[in-house]
Amino acid sequence: MPTSICQDENERVEHRDRVFTALSAEPRRQVLISLLNASPEEFVELPGAATSPALDCELRELRSRLIHRHLPVLEDYEFVRWEMDPFLVRRGPKFEQVGDVIAVLLDQPETVSVQFVTGYGQLDRDLRTE
Image (cartoon, one colour):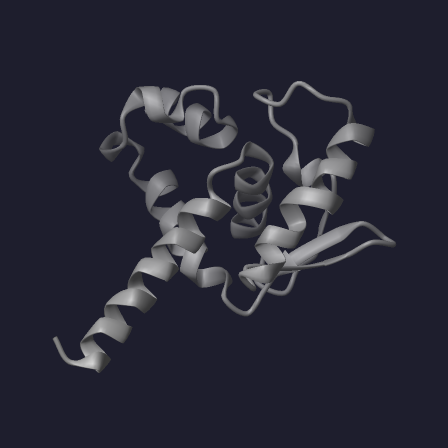
C-alpha cells in the first residue's frame, strides 16, 4: 500500500478516535452540545454548560473535573477554547469535526439505540419527545 494511502487512513482513524474520546465522558458531551446550541462565536458559562441529570456531583467538584480532566482533552483536540476567569468556553477551530457528529445524533435520534442515549441529557430528552 502506498505511503500516502496509509497516511490518509491513519489520519481518518486518529480523527475518529479524537471524536469518540471527546464524546466518551458526560461532561464533555454536555459542553459540546451546549456549544452546538450556541452561536459559533458565543461563549457559554461553565460549569453550567456541562451539567446533566446523569451527573451526580456538586458544581465545585464538576468545575474541578472540567479544569483538570475534561477541558484539556477538548482543547488539545482544538474542539474548544476556554477561559478560567470568567469560567467560559467557546468553539475551537476544529469544533465542526465533533459538532457534525453531535448534530446527527440530535437531529436523527431514531437512528441511535435507546440504550445508548438513555440518561444522557439532551440526547435522552430529544429521543423521548419523538
